[in-house]
Image 1 (spheres, rainbow, N blue to C red):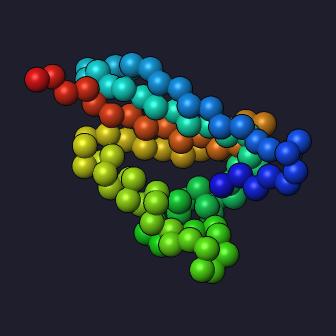
Image 2 (cartoon, rainbow, N blue to C red):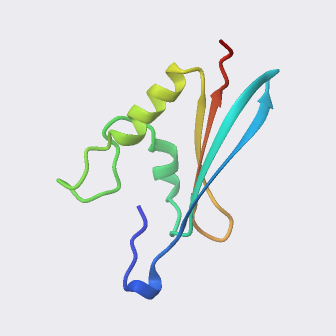
Amino acid sequence: AMRAGGLADRGTIEISTDSVVDDSCRNIRVVISDTGPGLAQDALANAFDPFFTTKEPGKGTGLSLSVSYALIKGMGGKISLVNREGGGAVVSILLPVVKE
C-alpha cells in the first residue's frame, strides 16, 4: 500500500511478465513493483501470514496475501516479496505452464 500525499507525490506501479525455465519447467513470471517506501523487516517476514496487516485496526483483515499465497502454491507456483533497492516493494509470482 503506497501512501501518497498530493498528486505530485503519487507513486507508480509497474507490472511485467515473461517466460522462465525453473527446475526444467516452463513458467510464466509476473512481477509487480512500486515506488513506495517499501516494507519494514517484520512486515516482510510476516506478509503471507493470515490476519497480518500493517493497516490501522478496522481498515484491513490481513487476508489478501495469505489467500494469494495459498492459491498460487495450490497451482504449483511460487510467490515472493522483497524490498527494491532505492525504495519500493517487488512481488514476484511464478506459475507453471500446463500443457494440454
